[in-house]
Image (cartoon, rainbow, N blue to C red; front, side, top):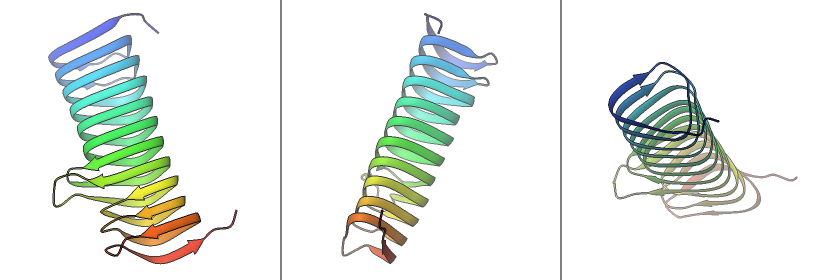
Length: 193
């Protein structure tokens, strides 16, 4: 790991891999190659075409990532990615991810969000102040799952709470589940370990 701090201000397109201790990007930036750093803070819009590896990534604005392996991801704004693997994720805004793996996640939706497959240990999904906030997902798997305003094909967990306005095709649980009156699960299956 290179022991330096890199700062990008304005607009840039980086064609080389970036290795740094910290990265600060303000404005509009595109990184065409891999990024490896301890920490990055992004304000504005950022597109990362390759792999991101770092401990902490904070973004305020629009963030587009191909693949990321992180310890902590904090996004206020828009997040779009193919695959994210992180210990902790906190999103307040819009998220569109094909595959998300996390130990702990909290997503506060500001509009319709899409996550293809989600594997989490503990997850909280809730609606922000927008009337149209909704999470659409193919599958959500975890230990402790608490959802609101979610439409999913499959939800699988030990403890599952379907809060208001959830539409689930199949709910698998091993310990317990709760469904609000305004929510539904077409099939409910108790799995035995």
